[in-house]
Length: 263
Image 1 (cartoon, rainbow, N blue to C red):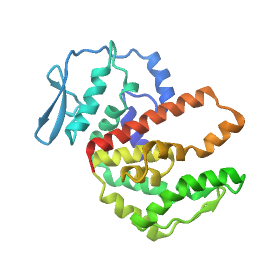
Image 2 (cartoon, helix red, strand yellow):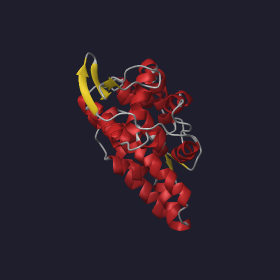
Image 3 (cartoon, rainbow, N blue to C red):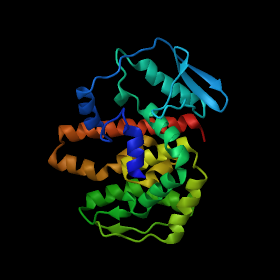
Image 4 (tube, one colour):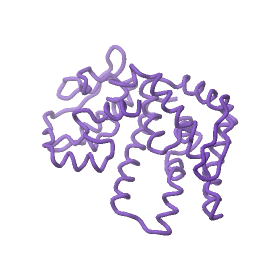
C-alpha cells in the first residue's frame, strides 16, 4: 500500500516520492504553462470543487476533484492561484494529497488503515536510546506525553525497548489503535494521517496531531530528536536539510488539510 500511495502521488505528474529528487526530475521535464486566469470554488452535489476559468479541476485519473469542505477546496484553489508562469506540482502539496485521497484512498481505505497500523507495531516512540543521558532525556520529554495520551485516550499501552531490537506490542494495543482509526477513516483524513505517519515514522505522532493532542511543530520536532542530536554533534548536511524542509512542507500541508476537514 505504501508503494500504491507513492505511485498515486507521483503518477505522471510527480516522478519521485523524495521532494528533492522530484525537483531535479522536474528541472529535466518541461513544466506545463499556467493556462488559466481565474480560480474559484463552488459547492456542488457531493461536496466542493475548484474551477479554473469555470472548468472543474480534475484528478490525474480524470475525475472531477470533489473536496469534502469549502475550506479544503479553498486550500487547493489557493495553490492553483499561487502558480505563476508555469504549474509546479512541487509547490502544491495539498493538491497532490487531495488527488491521492480521491483517486486512491477512497477505494482502498482499509489497506491504507492497515499500513498505518503496521507503523504502530514498530512505532518510533517505542525505541529509546540507552545513552547518552541527555538524548535519553530528550526522547522521554518529547515522546512520553504522546504515549500517555495513547494510553489514556485510546486505551493503548505500548511496550518500550532500548536500541533497535524489535519489541512485540500487545494485540490489545494495536487493536485499540485500529478501533480509533476506523472512526477517523474518511479518505481525505486517512490520506493526511498516512502521509504524516510516513513522514515522521510514527503513527502515534500522526494520530495525536489529528486529535489536537499535540501541535504539528511539536510533533515534527519530536520525530527528529535523533537527527537533531546528530546535527548538533556532527554538523548538518545541506542536501539533507533541503530534503527535510521538503518533507516538513508536505507534513504541514497534511495538517492544513486536516484542519480544513474539521473535527
